[in-house]
Length: 73
Image 1 (tube, helix red, strand yellow):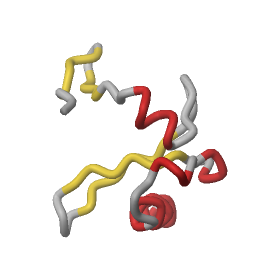
Image 2 (cartoon, rainbow, N blue to C red):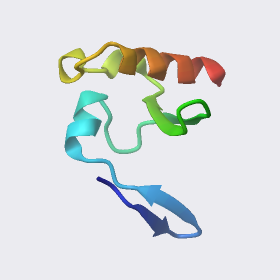
Image 3 (tube, rainbow, N blue to C red):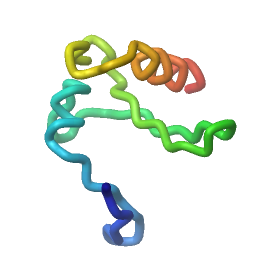
């Protein structure tokens, strides 16, 4: 479980290494953050979808949601 932390004048969430590895994220990579109003969930998706490591996901729906979030932008 993560906590929302104060970060300067904003707020941030520390992502574990497992999550960043699964999404193929490195420090300073761009992400898309959106709010799924139906499920009331925050969705964080890598802007570069090519880095996603599929073997970390139990369901393809996670990747589908990330792609859907990118389309909103």
